[in-house]
Structure formats: C-alpha cells, structure tokens
Image (cartoon, rainbow, N blue to C red; front, side):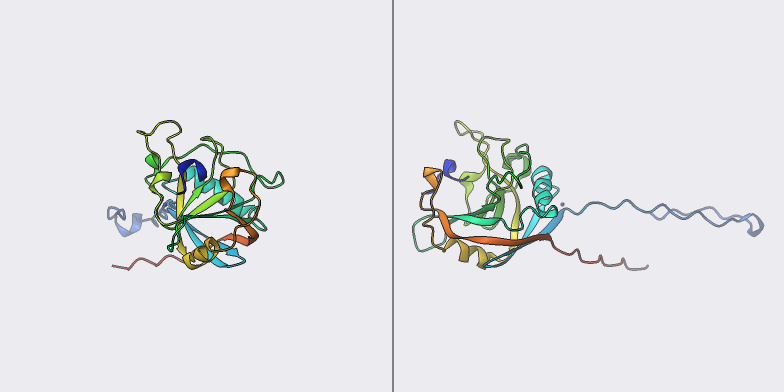
Amino acid sequence: MIRRRDLLALAATGAAFPAMAQTAPAAPAPAPVSPPSIVRVNLETGQGLIVIALYVDKAPITTANFLRYVDQKRYDGATFFRAARAPGPVDYGLIQGGVQNDPARVLKPIPHEPTTLTGIKHLDGVISIGRNAPGTATSDFFICVGDAPYMDADPAAPGDNLGFAAFGRVVEGMDVVHKIIRLPTPGKATNPVMQGQMLDPVVPILRARRAPVEAPVAPAVP
C-alpha cells in the first residue's frame, strides 16, 4: 500500500445637450482584464501528450511556480522518473516528474498551499507538487492515478498533517499517464521507500508549453 510518507482561475448614459454645445463624448476607459482562472499547459512526453489545466485562482503560489518552470523552459529535457503502483489489476498510484534538483534548473522552494486552503482534492488525474517538509517544494510534481485522499491535508492527523499541494488536473492524455504508470520500474532509488518505483528507462519530457489561448467570443450587440 502506498503511504502518505512515501509520496511525495453599465454602459453610462450622458445627459442631452443642445447641438451647439454638444461635444464628442470621451472614449470609455477599457475594462480591466481579469487574469484567467485556468491556464492550460501541454506536456509533450516520449509516450504522448498530456494536457494539464492549472487552477490559478485556487492555488496561485503553486501554479505560478509551475509556470515559471514552463516559461523558462526548465522542464524541457526533464523526465518522468517514477511510477508508484499499488498491487492489483487496476492502475492506482502516481507518476512523478521534474528536474530532480538539477542545480542548473531548480528554482527556490515555495510556501506550501494545503488542500484545506485551496479546496483542490487529490482525485484521479490531479497534479500536485512533491515536497519533503512543508515549504520545500521546487520542481518535482506528480499526477494521481485514482483518488488519493490520504494526500490531502488532515488537521486531525498526528505529525506532518498538511498533505501535498494540488494545483491542477489532467484534461487530456490520461491514457498517456496510464501508459507511464505501467512501464518497468527496475531503476535504482536513492530513497529506500521508492525502491521498485523508479522508471528505467525514464520517460523524457520533450517540451512543456502554455497551450494557445482561444480568442474570446464577442458579446452579442443588443
């Protein structure tokens, strides 16, 4: 069984004036543009495309961190290196990817956003950030295969009960996630609890890019 410790988004009207005194109305100020509440990211892997929707409004710190790695192309050439599977005929567990603390790619750790704050539960297809102690998360992330409530924060639990910081969900490519979790895992683990979970060969992340934003639909004219 995989245990908690193992896993790591009025138009104003003017008064009428006589024609002689009328002046052209000032152009209305443009309405402020709200940032999108969801940003999609395409992960092109050696096993196919995974598309992830990031919940920017619910987990702003964690999504901003992930997007820094994407926008700076730090995930290009990274890998999915771990596939943790529970025994049985049904796929259940997680796949993990990232830069694995490569000093040339890793950025500073970020504050922890627990599920009690964001409301994003660890359900099937959810992406979450790996960590050791709270506040140590950097690049490495994992995708849940099956629901994993034991990864959520649980204030009633003893010890480190803050869980992991979920921040998005796979919206296309769960078939690719299932391909990866079924791959051989004979790789050497530096952490003994991950023995039997390390992919060999690893799955390359070829490119990670924001998905193109579709043009908004113009409002209907009354």
